[in-house]
Image (cartoon, rainbow, N blue to C red):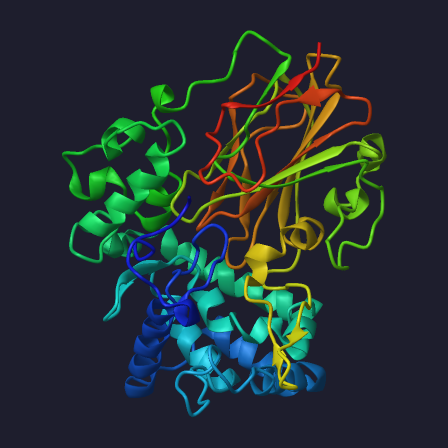
Length: 446
């Protein structure tokens, strides 16, 4: 199963949370320890807000509807465990002012490992760690759908991206206890990487790097995060057989849906796929009506480059801007009259995000006419919103070729097939390990 360190020790049920992809620790106490340290630091070390965060503050305070959202979202978080910091019901993040000061600190840090009394864990999406409960409230839902809010969040994430591509961000890559090349982190990284094919490769056998150099030769956090695989680590499935479809991302199967509609209510329970929304209203969306959507999610500790599922010619390659922290409302009453929030957060909303989040769209006309058009959607979630396409329209590519990558994190992806394409052999749902990238994900029926 895709996990991180900390799931190997006993976690009481009241502290355990399962979020697909291990972007936040399974032990809620590690998450709380991380937030507590940031709060303690920013309270003790007040700093002027960065310009982009001052712009965010101005938007909140000068726009009545946004002010209402950002005041109420914190008040709507239930005052009970597990949402509160302690049995008195005191929240960890109190209001939007504290939120902005915490973001001010995060924009100068890369994702890092945190030690708590109980365990060590990794917070792969630090902004989501702040918004985790607030974005599941009614006001949070409205705020993170708001176009003006998303506009300033995009600017904020671009600023963080500049830092993550700078040499200063490599500070967290050291081999110390909480470094990405420390014993815990490397152990988790390689456990996730070796599990799909049951190998026992070392980091340098799995990934392209320079073991003799500082931080294995990676110059920044993003350089490390977008690391390349050794060709031998992930062979291409039947490279000379165009009836075999290759897996586009190292990922765990989330859903397979047949007979998808051109337009559907992706925001309803069950999150049905809505092709027109998923494909950014591109005219080719109609070509996939009645077809198949295969969706799988990426782990925080996995490989984050994309590869072509088929050989063919790229007919579409573009990025659609979308939301960054929006999740569907899926609250429920706990029997005491107090509303619970969706515990899985954004990672449990992948069908919804396929239509709303920032996403990369690549449509390939397969060489094999039995496959026709094949769609790929790379879906950015949380602060993982930078989708980088590395192929161009009109370009002919081969199965297994790189087509792009997620920067600063990873997310989810979809493969879309036309109606009438007869496929078999999709991976089983809820598989406990990743399906290897470039391995067989399906095959045309004979």
